[in-house]
Image 1 (spheres, rainbow, N blue to C red):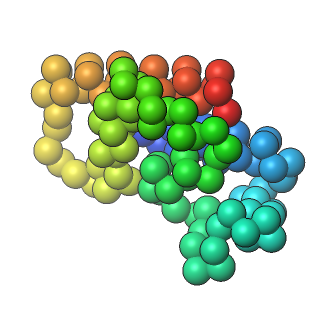
Image 2 (spheres, helix red, strand yellow; image 1 turned 90 degrees about the vertical axis):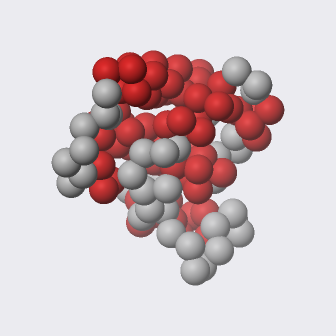
Length: 112
């Protein structure tokens, strides 16, 4: 589950760099600030999936999607701290999370 959530973070950052034609995250942050999309007290060096999603044009379409938005909210529970959390998820929770990740990755790949 940890790696799956991290994959969503990496994909969002990759898509943002493609959208804004940037080669790295520092350039992306500068470009988003230059375009006034990202305020100077915010950063793209974050693990907050919802914050990264908001930076993408058209991300509001996901919010309006009644089937996918709850799946994104499930994926958005992800935190880098899962890497250090010894409490394992049960099989049902893990399966639901991975299924949500797969569908959100598919949406990101086809809509951003």
